[in-house]
View 1: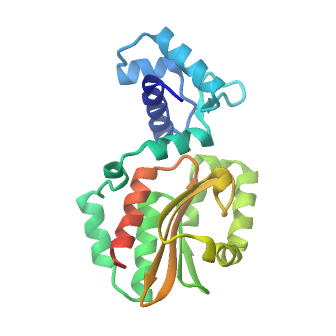
View 2: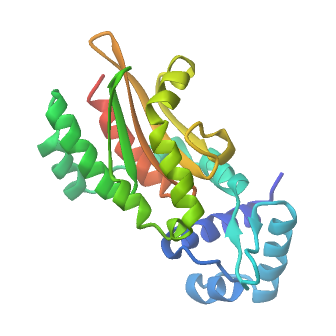
Amino acid sequence: MISERKKNLLEIIIKEYLQTATPVSSGSLVKKYKLNFSPATVRNEMMELEEESYIYQPHTSAGRVPTEGAYKLFLSDLSESTKNKSLKDSELKVLETLFAHDESSYKKTAKAIAELSKSAVFWAFHKNDLYYTGLSNLFSQPEFKQLDMVCDFSGVIDRLEEIIDESFEDLEDGRQVFIGSDNPFGNFLSTVLLKYKNNKQAGIFGIIGPMRMDYEKNLALVEFIKNKFK
């Protein structure tokens, strides 16, 4: 079990890391978020979070970075209302304008969602009809400054259709999130995914990004697609 205070602190660390993509220090948290407990307490809590494997210190950095376990805890702790967070009116307007029930519109909508999520998007309209877009969005993320990450993800793209075929029958209907080691598309990535039925044919829509992704936003984007196939 993790205390409520540590859980709140971990959520702040995750949100800060999502925004900055740089390791988070206790000092920066106290200053920026005006926390109502002392810097020494924050340091101690962060030390305990590290011991409990929710954050880690990359190399010799003074800051800490969330682990796969931290993201999973954050996601499981989101209330249903937060998981169903609404898109901005401007975002919704763009998607509503683009979406229609034909393949050309699906592709335009996928491109827009790739831009909004700053991630890659794939859409298997039917089991063997795959479209993907947004690779440049993904490769512009700080994580992909490392050449090995680029090479690893390129391998995922080469096998994308094969991975979907292998996973298709095992995937449950509805929205799902796969983080790190649970993710069939790569243990260094996260995927927010939807399996749906359209005229008795199943389709899969997914947003792929680094584990440092905006899960709330991406769940809302996937929810938009889900609502179009009810």
